[in-house]
Length: 357
Image (tube, rainbow, N blue to C red; front, side, top):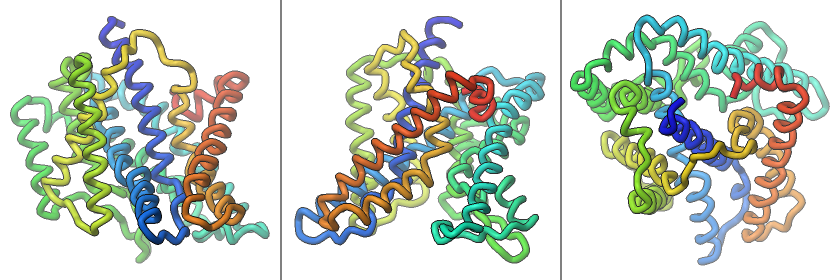
């Protein structure tokens, strides 16, 4: 591996870790249930919106961009089978494993005295088992992995549409236009008259295709390091985008269509380039390699910790920050300790459940 690609993969590890932290914040409930009044309350509420919605909207979209770019950076039709085998290990196996774990765990919890903790149907039936394992019914966060599996299965089609630089650019532009006028992939499927989410974000295909286009045509630009001035300006743009999203939430505004997609593209680009302020010539510390485990373990852990703290702590709004800090500390500590122990003492099993990450 040449120095440039080595630096890129080191950067990807750190960026993925940062994105996983953002995903943890998306699922955080520390700011809920408190009654915010006065100027201080407004500040706290806006801070909560900024941390859990403002800067976090970029997280999954950037994951799609990175995933698409990595898959197509050296893709040819001849490589399709090898790519499928690779993604079966890194996507399909971990997806099925964790969905099975959560299906069993929540069904057992639903049979216990603590069944009130589960807000969904937990009856043991073939339908619920299949929904849990194949449609991530009991761990909604894995919709992202499911979408990647679906997109991966369509690899030859995406490559056919994007392999020409100019036609591919036009295809992406058309998909964005169609999305802006309401023609987009359905977010739900109907089974026996009931709706189930598959594509939680209808724009996921757009950002995956942008990543695929980058992997095919712009890999060198994507991996080259920008200077510190560009990195600092990108950081400013990143937080400005986060502030814009927060303000739209605060004032009940909506940014839709092409304007929304452009904002998210700028958001993603600024996030990627702002990390060029760091060198990445050396491999990051092991803690940065636990991104997948953060993704796999954070949701229920964070929800129950923050709700427990809400019961224990005083109900004054300022304690939402205490709730946030303790929740994140306990949640991340548990995830890192479990990940470290599994990786050190059960390395093959750890590799199996994380897809070798």
